[in-house]
Image (cartoon, rainbow, N blue to C red):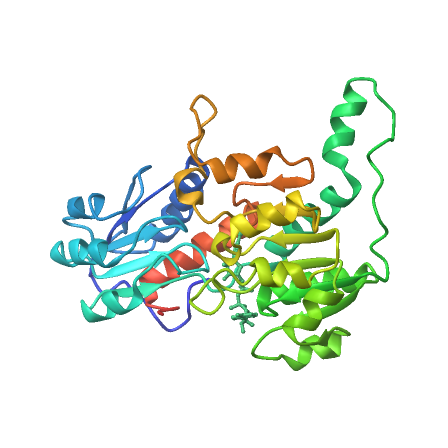
Amino acid sequence: MAQKGLSLDDGSSRNVAFFSTRPYEKQVFTELLNVRNETLTSPIEATFFEHPLNPSTALSCEGFSDVVVFVNDDVSEATIKALSQNNVSHVALRCAGYNNVDVDAAAEMGISVSRVPAYSPETVAEHTLALILTLNRKTHKAYNRVREGNFNLQGLMGFTLHEKNVGVIGTGKIGKAVIRILLGFGCNVLCFDPTQDSSVICMGAQYVSLDELLSKSVIVTLHCPLNEHSQHIINADSIAKMPDGVMLINTSRGGLLDDAAVIKGLKSKKIGYLGLDVYERESELFFSDHSQEIIQDDVFQRLTTFPNVLITGHQGFFTQEALHEIGEITLDNIMYGGNRL
Ligand code: NAI
């Protein structure tokens, strides 16, 4: 919500370009802007592009003060240079993660970068549980069987979550929301985070080393950001430490997994279930319809062939409430300069 005591209405005008915009986002931002513009002397002008921001589309940003981007827009040094040449002063991420932004280059060229650090962490946490429960109880398969008049239960057996060890890597906002839900299921929650949070212990979860978490958890779920320390945190070595048949869930960022090692783990049955909402090279696939094309990414295609793999296309954030919150905070960031990196 708008911050009290601050006002943009100083006559300065903002001309904002939204990139990678889908119809549902355009609708939310248009509605929110209409409300805000009613009270501003200089309304915020918005232009919505479906195409992503990248070094070439950044060249056509002349006249825009701000650009609004999403998880797979390319905000590399080359893009930032082009934005700077066009006098764009601010990149507003309408998401939490900022691994796609060269923050140093932006600082060097005097372009501010903001993000939406928190918006309903429960939204992503609930999707995480949707993946866990679907993979476990195979409701996606049961749906098809029952529609075809097949009531055979063979192959649909799950396991009871109650009292199982679940490992949560990353106990920030989303990790904590996941922990709360898992504790409600009666799970024993083992956590790893370089920065421990006493509220996690108060909730009833316990911090352990990463190795202990990996070796004791029947489900491992990732809620840490992607950075140079966490890239491929799940690799051949870490998979080897997990119990046979482990369930691995990633709703954070694709680069946390070494996909080749994960595929080996699936083939050897070390990994018994895999739930993904993100994928390392998702920018070439996600958020668009490729159903009439031949998908060229063989790793992705291989992943989809396993019967125990469930992939959603980065929809963890996708609820009405979260979109609304993302919209409000992004506009606040543009208007009042908050949440700068
Ligand atoms: P947060 O910043 O509140 O928490 C991240 C936690 O990870 C922090 O406690 C941090 O200390 C910890 N951490 C950092 N490096 C780590 C490491 N190497 N190992 C273990 N823990 C580590 O972030 P939040 O809001 O909980 O988001 C987590 C991630 O979820 C984001 O970085 C983003 O990539 C992803 N995300 C995915 C969405 C989706 O739609 N699927 C939507 C929103 C966020």
